[in-house]
Image 1 (cartoon, rainbow, N blue to C red):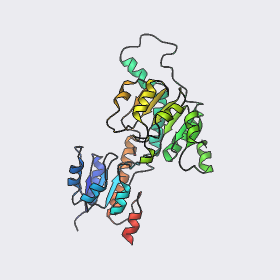
Image 2 (tube, rainbow, N blue to C red):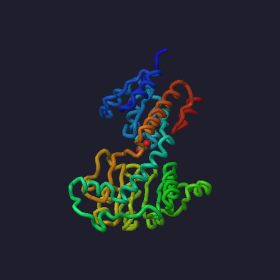
Image 3 (cartoon, rainbow, N blue to C red):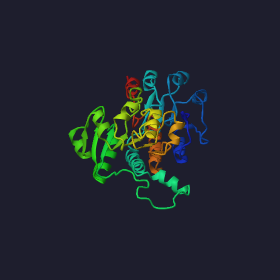
Image 4 (cartoon, rainbow, N blue to C red):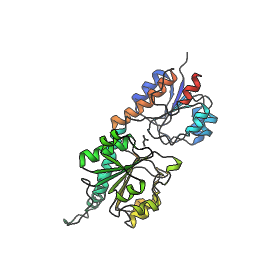
Amino acid sequence: MSKPEILVARAVFPEVIARLEEHFTVQANQADETWSQAELIARLQGKAGVFTTGGDRIDAQVLAACPQLKICANMAVGYNNFDLTAMTAAGVLATNAPDVLTETTADFGFALLMATARRITESEHFLRAGQWTKWGFDMFAGSDIHGATLGILGMGRIGQGIAKRGAHGFGMKVIYHTRSRLDAALEAECQAAYVSKDELLARADHLVLVLPYSPAAHHTIGAAELAQMKPTATLINIARGGIVDDAALAVALRNKTIAAAGLDVFEGEPAVHPDLLTVPNVVLTPHIASASLPTRLAMANLAADNLIAFLTGKAPLTPLNPAVLAAARA
Ligand code: GLV
């Protein structure tokens, strides 16, 4: 029997391609070309599965043009690049890559918070530019992390990881807001107190965003919310571009409505709002929160495991629309 054909839409670890090749005829993209939707559709013809990353959009148009497609396996925990409703309607399984990236991403959230609050990149640019001629009593004086109030918006696994780091490692008071409140045992483990969104905005010294993107979450933080924050506060976005109104944030940073921001994700990335590039009090990183080598390998292997399991008749590990499995069984 011939092997099923799959597409790997972006360059990935060669050892993961080799694993996939044991089970499938693989069309890879190790040159990491950027494809238009039409090019993606052309390459998906005859493919039963596709290995995607967070930038590869699978929508109703792609699905309609690729009737042989059975599974899209995302090498990301977020899946706002998938139109899940359209995938379920088309009977196409979607999988993501949760859990394996939780601790690495929480580490990065904390690193970005510390770099932002303590003005690390801003001061490094100053030093590299040869501007350091003498010590100054308030030179790059930032805000403290230990003992401060850490606010977390969205309290899934990554949010909980950040809460634990803050509470246990830095003696922070942790407050959070999310759609569904944690149970008492998890709140105790995270030493986190549930508050309203308004209270979170008003009280946080450092506010970390870790909620998933959905159209309802678009511009969760805009001019009005920024105005509710303390002028000394820092805002960290490791969630998704579009959760923050980047134009409004650039204005708030320039006007010092808040003290500083650390951003790993951007509206319309890899493009970055030009005004964010010219304000000094923002730390900018190119969507690398999960980027430790072991974690990226684990994410790629999990996407591959989902493809291998599903297309060889076994249960996928992390299905997003299990209704598709039930329908296939019926
Ligand atoms: C990264 O942003 C992910 O969703 O895995």
